[in-house]
Image 1: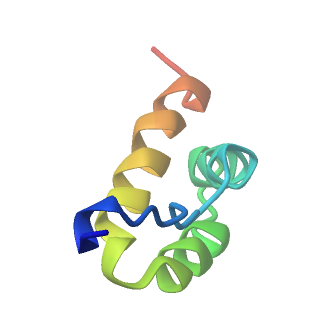
Image 2: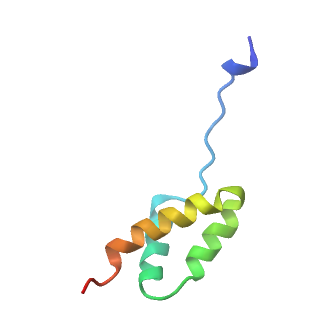
Length: 63
């Protein structure tokens, strides 16, 4: 059995509910939740930050 046959469980950096909550907070000018999630994500903080920003567009008032 080679090393390539080993299956590892994916690491969850942030749940969809956490990203959604942070996106709503960002839309309301509060970056506390987003900062906490990005800090917790470590090396994947950019990926989490982009997910939060992408979702925040749905909650930002449009002119």
